Figure 1 (spheres, rainbow, N blue to C red):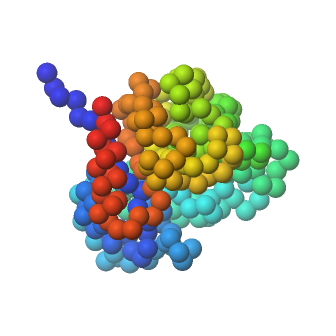
Figure 2 (tube, helix red, strand yellow):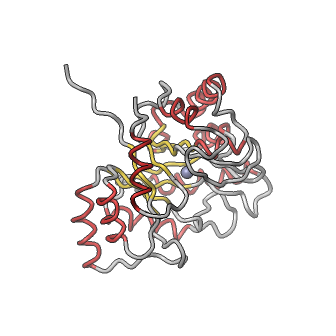
Length: 280
Ligand SMILES: [Zn+2]
């Protein structure tokens, strides 16, 4: 009998200067998969990508099974004005060039639109335009913590969106536990998790869950506040997060941990090791 390989669990790492430095860190931390932005943590600018830097990244990335790119918050495809389209194109191009397999985007907010529905329409149009040519990097939409004009807090938004997408098989989704909790879903109790994940399956389909962000938060359920917390110090609790991760709907899906800034790399490595141990 073939031993089925367990799904991968990795870290979101903060880019301080160059991507090659970050990939070196990923190797030191032994994270099998990783996620990052292409903009630096403090500078609000894109990292530098000289020819030499790209070569270095290609060499280093051989040590990592999958790279997930998190789009910058300048990208707001549901916006009726200034939707960050050029940033999105730049990040897609760089992502492909650097060997990222997925790009995670927040669906965005319907700024400048009359209502959320119009924002969903704009988002669908932008995605359809992209999907016409895009085949090398998978576009993954993440559920968010916010309400009102923000798309993707309510799972029903994704169902509505998929109905407007020409090639729905090319779209994936990422589930963030902290965002779901802050939006108002019960991801703590067994029953709540069943209800939430059943809703996920009926609105987007099990096969479209591409990634899990197993995150903790101290914020109240329904607060709409997006703030992550350390494991063991939050409102959701380790027991619930572990159960969520191993729920039949999620148990084979890769996991990225978006933990708050740690004192040192040793601590980050310890968290990764601990949560990897939750894999059933
Ligand atoms: Zn997330």
